[in-house]
Length: 111
Length: 123
Image (cartoon, rainbow over all chains, first blue to last red; front, side, top):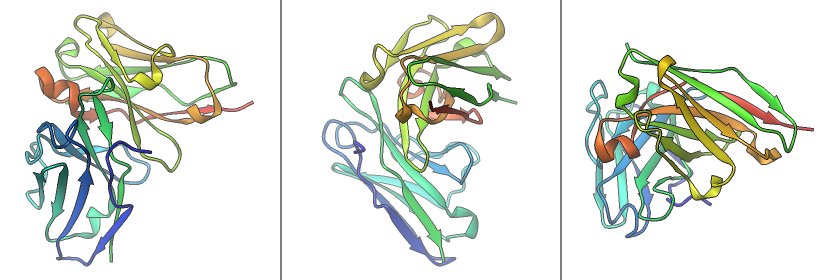
């Protein structure tokens, strides 16, 4: 069982917006602003999309945005495109003995 | 340009060890942490640990303590991850990934990833 909880799947039509949630505890998501999001296409390595809750690395589209409220972080993708179809993973720093934890992943389907 | 290239697929028997390499180029190897993350077939990502290539210091996930060893050779800008006492549930793709930025960010985010190394554990 993953330390962070994500929905198994979400879907949306091209042009729409979707939001993926990532729920943790006060020992990880809620306690620190070290939340990140990764996109992974089938057979490929993950790609960093968001770090420090809401920051985008250079080159990442501004259609991707992140936020956090309490123990839940969220990734929003606006103006959905076919190329956004992928698995998305959240990650957080945690005060436990294992300092980095991932969510179980969410499969995004663009209808 | 930054590149991280891993060694090829491995097939091992239960109880054996595997050592995966990760060669970095295009940046100062000792300036960034190197992490190891694995992904079992059809499953999610699992963080295994990091190595500071400058000092050689390491931090392992509790789950792998005693079974994993991360090392580096700065002369050839290469990091290594060795996992011992392999079990069938260690079958996974193993990724190395560069830490993103310096300080604490470098210990919790990963920007450049290797292509992954499939390790299959089977009798």
